[in-house]
Image (cartoon, rainbow, N blue to C red):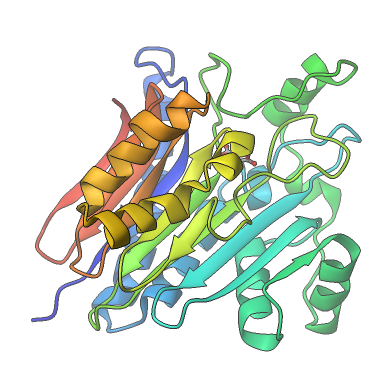
Length: 309
Ligand code: ASP
């Protein structure tokens, strides 16, 4: 039988055991389970890694618990601006969108950029015109409204503070979502989607839609999806750095992920984590924060759903 594997994350941050109610913990784990199962099913039925990561991310975008799609945080103007990217390790094709609003599943729009245009990255109004041309339905603000996120924004709205969703000791909603997978054909893919930072302004964009920073996939090395303080992940070119350490220094997937997350990005002040796979179905879930919403599953029976260290 051919083997395959998948891993997902729902953001990393100051997730401390005991700060969350048992009910909330169950809700998060159930949402992670649903998403990992959706991606796994695609792989089990002989589908591609690309389809698997898209399906897993769609599930996470549809959950109000995570900062992506439906659960996206508020910008300084009280809006939602979402970013997403996807990459196919077989062809090294990639697609990304940034600063988009009203789109239920930004990851699918990113995939459409990859497959239906000559470009890699569309942003803002142009990306919205592209979505319109493809007849994407626009959700109104109420679809994205969430009381917790609104309060989170009200707390800092009139200040100059940005807030990474995972950077405060609150017991609830955290982070960006992402998925990586290796399919039965040994092809790998990565996808990442986010609402960014609470109270962000000036068209701020983090690492999530940036190929090489928040997302990267190359069959020769690895597929990576990151979450964390985006500015540092951009400066560290984190996802590609993992790939480089494997390609040029022959580090294993786990060694490369640990070197980048526990040393390199940490040294420049970045906190967060990543999920990664290689074409041998190995999985790495590495973070330098107190916790990361994460799950993984492979065809050999390994399965894990976890939040804390
Ligand atoms: N990396 C994301 C950003 O900076 C945020 C996150 O991972 O929670 O936009």
